[in-house]
Length: 230
Image (cartoon, rainbow, N blue to C red; front, side, top):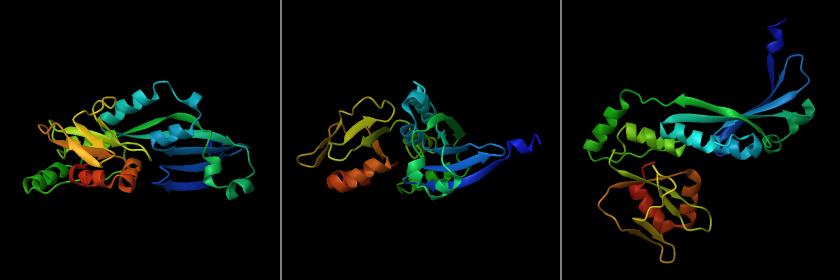
């Protein structure tokens, strides 16, 4: 009887979607009348869907500290669901996946396979460029790219952030608050200016920014295609 009291039934599942960056389940514990939705996904998306007061004040600092070390981080949140089982089965996920209570972060180590570095080294020796496409946090991806020597230790990494209707911003990956003065994009003439040519650099961009650049800044897209690594 004690064991049975901890049994949990899954009432509804919302599968993982890379575009939505999350998945959810609605569950009910045996002998309980309460339905609960649990949601996991990218920490940024989970934070966006959670009540602001449920997020720790140092959320971003802690998240950044783990992603910079190359850990894979997943956010988790929940909310009680006060609907009937029939209504839950018919509801769309957007009506349930909101106003969540943030629970915490799950931290996992992203280890390289033993053969990865050797293969990338051979590709570099053959002057074949390597590019990383991943669903991980961008700082996690950059840490892994450095570990496998896709990005050399002395190379600069520049993250491009682009929002619809705005001029793209360039920031150093290691110091995200510092704007890159050596790299400028002139929106009026749609030209890309590299003032400091003494350092080799790599561009890194997330999916949302890449979509904006592809739609609104075609000339910048050409440069990103040449120097983009992550």
